[in-house]
Image 1 (cartoon, one colour):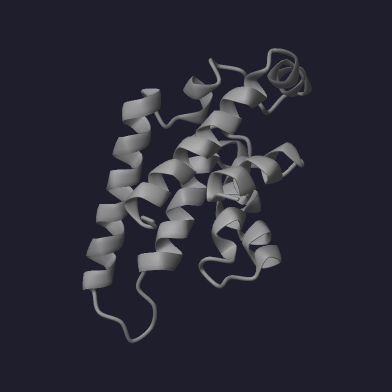
Image 2 (tube, helix red, strand yellow; image 1 turned 90 degrees about the horizontal axis):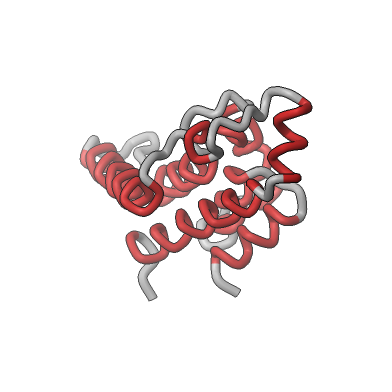
Length: 147
């Protein structure tokens, strides 16, 4: 099963976009899957349903941080590498979808209201998010986890 397939399954199971992306890489990155879900919880819906940066993208950024990020006693070159990889993810996602703003990706549908969340389901906007999750995983796999 690919990372995208795992993320898709997690998202369909009720987890948010950020959780689904980070979770799908938890085994590869030797991160506790439950911890990955907890860490990414607040990033769903464009960060707490504020619909800023797409949660799938922020989940991808967390993956890149775990893979390339700077920890204690590591050099600053790891920061530069991480920033480069993050820019590449953002640029690639934007090239495919035109924006990384959750609000725009969902055509202005507000996730902050009950009405908006109902519209999200009824209008099939959830399918868009499944696509965004898959796009991020595909980009990460090509960029950072080539076969």
